[in-house]
Length: 246
Image (cartoon, rainbow, N blue to C red):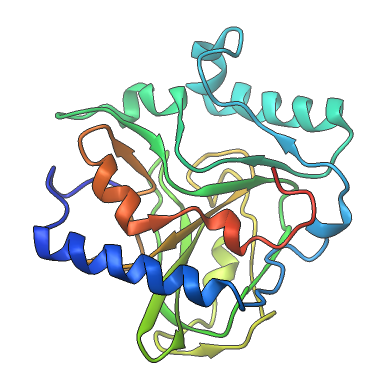
């Protein structure tokens, strides 16, 4: 999840991605993605989980795994819901913890869509796809077990969906290039042992160009790389089918 360079895209790539975004949104007008969480639509309310500095004692909560998991569980229980969601383009204090700080600008702007819920929650493919890549990263704060799907709904449109923080068992039997239908039981939420030491949740990301990444892609960007990140990544909420999505 580390930016390989500050300048992610060339001018030519930026033009290409700008045009590709137009094709994607035109296709989306008639697309019918399947639910990625089977009962997400049946939950009349979804809790929007706040990850910013407005939360009291955010420093202790968001910079340590156990307090963060307790906070998530308490917020879900208090709201009497099954799932909480965290949005696209959020500036998150959790990424200012020591393990995320490296040389260069702080990467703390989240370009995925998180769905927080019980361990072993099932995840399903929204569209027909093939397995682009998958990996397991044991490092703390990483994606843990990750699957990336490649979707080509049109001859001139290919994009990718990334599923992070999965159970390690979700990777069993996968093969690069393997085709999977829409609605396929793809994976399950991992526990902290499998998912990079996070509270159980899915990091769902929609990427227009994987560049040279395999089994990984930056999920958070710095202010310096954000403009390129927003060309590469579309808000994945557009593929999360639910009647009550914030």
